[in-house]
Each structure stands twice: as C-alpha cells, then as structure tokens.
Image (tube, rainbow, N blue to C red):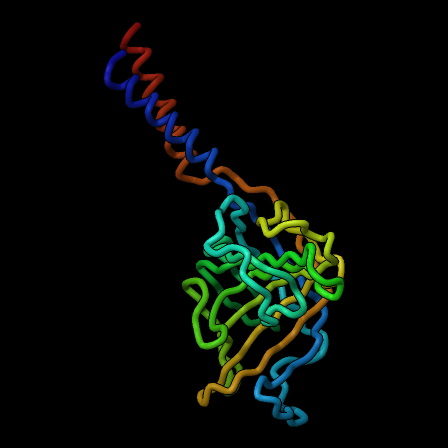
Length: 238
C-alpha cells in the first residue's frame, strides 16, 4: 500500500472515530409560561419594577452529552434542588447553549447537569434533572456564560430543570433522551445588581424536543479528503 493509500485509510479511521464519539444530542427548549419574580433576600418588588411582563417566554437550543461519567456521585440531599433525593453531578454535559427571553439573548459555552434520584428514600421526595450554568451559591458553574442587562440587573445564571415522581428516573445516570418532567419542566434565571442583590425569574410548563444531530463538519472534511486521496491513489496504481 503506497503512502497516499495509508494516509487515506488513516483519515477514514479518524472520521469514523469522530462519528462514533459525536455523542452530544441537540435539544431545543421552549418554556412559554412566565411564572413570576422573587428577590432572593426576601424583599418585596415594587409595582412596575418587574424585569419581565406577563406572557414573556424563554426558548433556545443546546447540546447534551449523555455519555459522560459523573464528576461526583451519590451526594446527600441538600435542599438546594427542592425535595429531591441523592444526586450526581456531570460537569460539561450541557454545551453551546443559546437562549432568548423577552427579545434578549444569552449564551453558555458549557454547563453542568445534576441528576437527583429519590429511590428508595422517603415518599415525599422526587426525582429531578437540573441543567445549570453561571453563578450559584457564591461559585461559578460551567464556562463562557454571557448574559444581558435589564435596568440595574444583569443575568448571571440559568437553570433548566425537569421534576418527576420517584419512578421518573430510577437512577442517577444521565437520562437519554432528555424528556419533560412528569410534574413540571421549567427554567429559572437569576439576575444580580451592582450591590449583589439577586432576583430569580421563573418560567414553568415547557417542552424539550429532541432534534437530529448532523455529523460534525470536521468529520465530513476528513472523510471527504480521505475519499479524494484514495481515489487519486487508485488511479496512479492503475
């Protein structure tokens, strides 16, 4: 086998490998119900000082890699995610998120997914999946968070979640595919002003729709180059 044929074979193997490992699936989300706003310090919001009007919707797209191994497993319930059971964290499961809310856009390079499974703990707990990025509890989750500013407040975090019964998940593994929660699928946005006062904006009752994932452009390029080189090699051999 000549050098061109060897190179072509290597490129084909590389392209095949890229295809095999192109595991992230593309999702779209649309959460049409604006549920309300809350100042996290417990203070009231003056009439006319709300960031969004009734009827505002939030939507967007992101990639989700369900093949990742957990960064941390079987962590005890903390109440941070509501009445959920033990949970695992998957760093980087959410990728390339682009969202729109009230005519404003935001983007996220990567975020984490938390999977909480209540089995077999007490009956009052639930299962949940939380796809998060940005500022949470004084720390930062994920990378490349780019928000927008409304008045004195800037978007600093995003959480797209689904909640279901104890039979909703059955384990702390990443779900594949992602689905709507049996109880609720929603999104929370947290905004922060210059004094670090935070306001949570809640949306509820949405949809997560799976869409097809095309072969990555790099794999197509490698594959095309390999075929061209292989064709030339065969002509010269003939």
